Length: 257
Image (cartoon, rainbow, N blue to C red; front, side, top):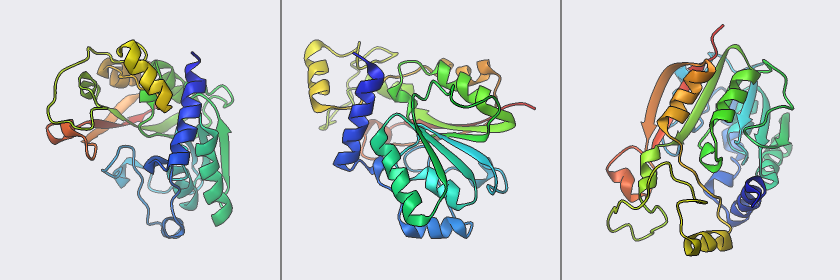
């Protein structure tokens, strides 16, 4: 199985089915961002604190990494940033183009793997914005390595990811009457599921998910040379385990000058 191709097809299907993370922002969001009133999400519910960003976005080179869908990229562009969006799903990128054409925004969009930013030169960006998406990659370390390389000295990496602990449970059990520990960590849809469960997942065309240890998520950023400056937690909506524990983590990291 070619993982990148499967994930591409699966996310194209998510766009077709109207997944909330594939719906472009409306004109009112863009109008407000042009007036300096904007907020964006790294995780599901809690907006990123404004103090995590530079005082002004105008003129900043921003890479929205695995962040297609017509949401964060157009918002940053309307606030004055020079925005590049990279995503593995052509349909997700099409949503960014929809907003850009509708609102007269200048957006660069590229189809590609979040772990391969070779099309971009060293120190190309002031900010890399990476909302929850590396759960769809089998290995997260290359994502941090490439983000560090393409950031300018003093640049920011803002990232969101799943709390790996949630993957010990069967998150596809819609009943969620109880929380039975079912899987060992690190979790992988391709290795943790039995053959019947895998076939059902493939038949439904769902994106494959992978848990990553905190040693890879946070320790991986530190190992590449980032300096972690802030962190917060968030919770999924409608997920039973989120009633008992935070299910997301967001980090702010700086590439030292």
